[in-house]
Amino acid sequence: MSDKIESIRAFMMAIATILFSAALFDAIYGFKNLIQPGISMVYNAVGTQIEPNMVTLVVFDWRGFDTLGESLILVTAVLVVLLIFGKGKILDNKLNSANNDLAAQSGADELNIEEEE
Amino acid sequence: MAEDSKRTPNWGQTESTPVLKLTALPVSIIMIALGIMTILGGHITPGGGFQGGAMIAGGIIFSILVYGIDGTPIKLSHKFINALESIGALAYVCLGLVGLLFAGSFLYNVGADFYNIVPAYVTAIFHYPDVTNAGIVPYLNLAVGLKVLVGLSTVVIAFSQFKKLGDDE
Image (cartoon, rainbow over all chains, first blue to last red; front, side, top):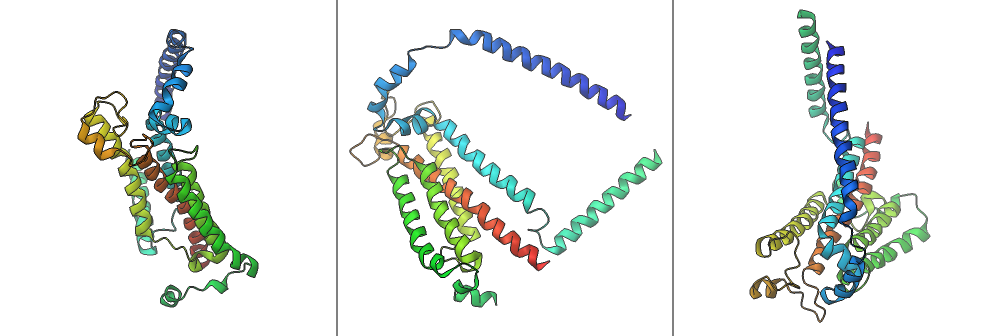
């Protein structure tokens, strides 16, 4: 049973890897047509008319979406830190014991099902 | 016990030295003021919301490390932190959505309006009242500053409380 699932999983993984690498190499091959070497000079010439400071201009005006993702990364990192290090400490004891009972019950159910099969 | 500590902060019960206890509060207040200055001057100096928020969080963390989580004078409650984080994220996304609504691209600078495609009344609303033509960038700075200040100080607050919880067990 588990060997079959493992082999199917490995097969799908291989196909996905092939597709992803093909798309990536194709994108890299076609990317050289998109590069304009003089775009930095255009930015430097136009930039200070939009915004007084170039650093702020790049971070918040041209790459505002990037900055949004950056701050969401920080939130996600803090959330994961709290989830990992605060596991079992934030909830009160009653809720924790209820969860443990639930987990024990579901584990027992799984055992029963496997035995029946 | 809990009510007593809430009424009078027990600054003397941590193990830090008197020199630290005397200097930590003024230094952290100066750090917080410097961070606020960095955020508010983000559009004319090469600083911004991220750096200013990190400086404010540094002041809060310094005060927590010296006085302890119970005795710190700069105390942030759970509700306050929650509100700051939500306001920061929502303000950033809503400013982006205004650009999407009126100009057709997310996070378009509707205050500066470089391409003249936004109606004049929208530009008048989001124009930063300043001699520089910054647009919505100062508001984005404020939002990111709130988010970063909360994110960095939350970790330290949580870790100091984890230690207390571990001692109780």
